[in-house]
Structures are given as structure tokens and as C-alpha cells.
Image (cartoon, rainbow over all chains, first blue to last red; front, side, top):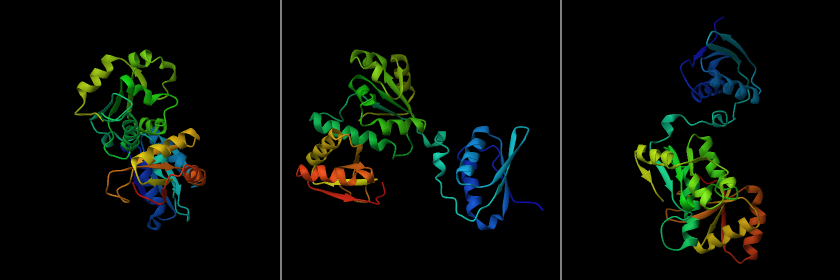
Length: 204
Length: 72
């Protein structure tokens, strides 16, 4: 008996995962289906997703391809696929850069500026496309330190593929180099290269 | 997550300071458009911290409302 085949070859995560989830949740699929994947990372993520949802499957490797025979279970599969594919596809990231030059947003009252900056950084992850990079310099580096309330938001952005560049000269000047908790320490060449190569630069 | 909404930006700033002081994780975010179209900030916290945060705010005399099940 032939079983339905889902061909996810040539597709990168999260596409194979989304296709697998759809087939699992669709009663029309039948008791079993075959999922074809040719990307090792996508295969591992799909396997992890299936195992966590207690979906029986077996994998056979054929050359560069992985053939997963998956059994449908009656319980609907609810686990969020994005947990298994943390890296945002290139298309979901824009070509723009956000430039954080201080601890505050705008000029005027410092306390207001600080709370505005928190609102701003916490919202970056909600707006697509995500920036390609976020550059932090001068007082802006303080937002990337170990005691920053913005660390969870910045870490999420980093997981989703946004590169965070922290000005090394600035971290050194403020004597906080050891406390940089997110992103990559970089220099003027990296920073100027990033700013020059951006389609646009957003400065809060 | 739950949202704490306030009557002024000053109250948001005071409330954030209180949460940070009490080491309760919270995030200053814009008030979601599904709640208000006006420009404003609010505080997002974990459901588990609902009562501790509410108690601290009440102690400080800060007026707030709590929103659940919002869409950003």
C-alpha cells in the first residue's frame, strides 16, 4: 500500500516542520505519511518536534535525503513550531539597521527618555521585518550589560537572527567590557560597515 | 503574560522602578493597539507575578488596571 508523501526536499526549517504539523492535524492524511527532507538541521528539528509530541516515527537516510515515516496520532499536535526553528528565515529580516546611541530615546527628560527606550527595544521583536543588525555605541552599550532589563528582549532578537554589535571602545571607556551580556563586541570597521551597508538606519 | 495599565507616564515610570527594585521581571512595552489607540506605555509581567506586583503598586498608591488575553 502506498502512503501519502510530503516532499519537503529543498525546503529549510521551518517549512518541513510546518508541513509535518499540517499533515498530522489533517484527518485526510490517513494513518501514516512519508516526509522527505534533505536538510540535516530541518530533519533534526522535525524529529525533536515529533518526539516531544509523542508522535511515532522512524527515519531512514538515503544518500543526502531523510525519509521519515510518521504515524498520525489522534491527539491534535499543538506544540508551537517556532520553538523548534528559532532562526528566522532571511526573508523575515529586513535590510535596515537600528542604531542605539544612548540609554534614552529622544532628547529632553532623561527619565522619560529611559522609559521610552525600554518601550522601543521591547517592541523591536514585534515589528516585521526584523532589523538585520542593531548597533550599540556610546551610552547605548549599557543596554547590553548583565543588569539590563532589556536582556530578555535582546536575547530573543539574537536567537531570531538579529546581529547585535556592541562598540568595544565604548564598553572599554565605561569600564563595562566584562559585563556585556549579549551581542558581539565590535570595532569601528564593523560598525561603520554595518551602517554603510544598511538600506536604512533607524535611530530612536 | 499580563499587562498593568496606568493613568500617566509618570505612573508607568514609578511602577517600573518598583518592579525592578523588587527584582520582579517586567517589560515596559507600548499599550497594544487592541486596547488603546493612544500613545502610551504599560508594563508586561508574568501571570505568576500578578499579586506581588499589584500589592506593591497598591502600597505605593499607584492606580492601575490589569489586562489579560491581549493581542500585540
